[in-house]
Amino acid sequence: MGYYEHGIPPVRDSRLKIGDSYTGNACDLVKCGKEGCLIQQGRGFWQAGACHMSLSLMMATTVENAVIVMHAPGGCGALLHSLSVQSAKGKGLRGKTPTTVPWLSTNLTEADVIGGGEKKLRETIEFADREYRPEIIFVVVTCAPSIIGDDAEEVVRNARLHVNADVASIHCPGFRSRLVATAYDTFYHALLRGLRLQPRPWIDFRPIDASDPNAELAEKKYLYQKSHTVNVWNATSISFADEQEVERLLTALGLKVRFFAEFSNRDELRLVSEAGLNVSMCNVHDDYILKFLEETFGTPYIIAGMPIGYRHTRDWLVTIAKHFGLDSQANALADYEEKLSIEAVEPFRKQVEGLRVLICGGVVRVGAEATALQELGLNILSIRAYHYDENVDPIFEDVAEHLPDVPVAVSNLLFEMTHQVKTLKPDLVISHAGTQGYLAKLGYPSVQLFSPDSSYFGYTGVYHNLRKIVFELKNNSYRDRLSRHIKLPYKQSYFEGSAFKYIKPLNTKK
Ligand code: SF4
Image 1 (tube, rainbow, N blue to C red):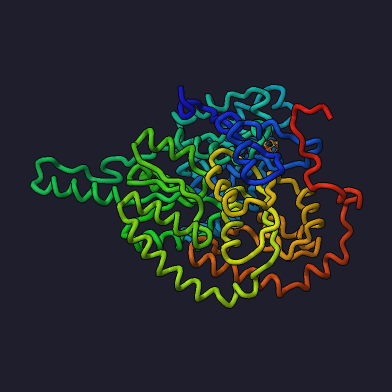
Image 2: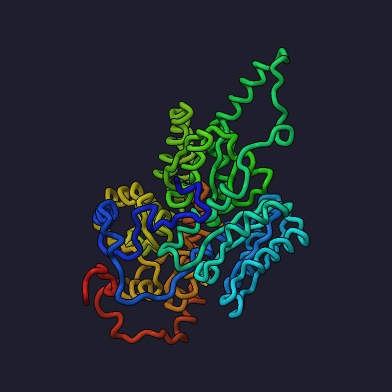
């Protein structure tokens, strides 16, 4: 029985070779990951991290006409207040109705934890269906019901028989995985088990009548259109501007582009199988569902890194184009676009050349961004990736080739970032969204590694990224004043020695 037949999805800790604690260089990191020793690395001290439920929710809240049912104590859903606003904004940008997301909680109490919460879950699903008439109900199963052994899967199976909506369960108790990236697999597992991913005859298409004299032509037309349709798998960190850039480049090659699964609805998701190729925009985001779609519908897939910077964008474009026999056209397009872009960014490039940069955040972006900025003449001081798994080997093999001497760490801990900043004293920090406040308190200029409101991909992305850096360097008043008035919660002795002194192999006694 494969992963896809199980009610509860696997975690990356068992599905892939992973790691969350490492310090060294890219070459040794890839080697250590392949040999499986990365998972042996741990820490003598951990700071609280994110729960993978938050990223599953981030994806689920983007789906149109859906209701979220949290099977949880009240606190687990707190994040939904902000996610709901973010989702409405993303929908609005994509020309969809910018509605916020209705969400309900079973609000498990101490008595429920003793007596079980299945009855409450069933009643909440029925209430959500009656009250909101959604297309989809996402049931989010968190730590408490998973620990007490609620059979949420059975409740969901029964609910499907008598509610109107499709019911999809997202099993994401935070304790199950060391990696928040497990969230992507968890969300996709909910989609592939809870929703139909192929069209319904007479609803989504009119079947071809074999007795029609034009039947053969109609069949050929359908097959041609399907084979030239590309599903691009997006992510919350990928902005609408990035989607537009990707669409601009692929349509220039004569391909039809559709984006899944975020900001889609139930009707659109039924068309997932109607494509000639699935393309992931991030090595660690989509392999779980793309493998399912290949197994189930025979749709091939490409995972070719992120189109960040000139070299990666060309590689990404040409890899996709090759599938359609269009590589020479893709190279010609890249030549043309690069020429225009190099001219446009020149005034900014001169101002950032030689800057000493620390890069921290999501593992694919930090690797791609580091090599892309090196191409533009910036000096990469260190790379810190939030996690590592085997899907990202190609990115770090590329880092090992182009930046062999740059220190690389795997860490998502803020105290280690603070140590790095205080000791490396970079000219600029490029870091994960949500860390800019901490960096401002330290008095260092920083730009986000990604933002749903900005452009990062392709040729437009290079321009916007450099422009943002120049702007940040010039606007220093806020962080200078803030850092003068902030008292950090660290003793000076903490900054002695390595930023990663707490990382150690799990099997050492010390
Ligand atoms: S770790 Fe568990 S209890 Fe905490 S927010 Fe995540 S699901 Fe809820």
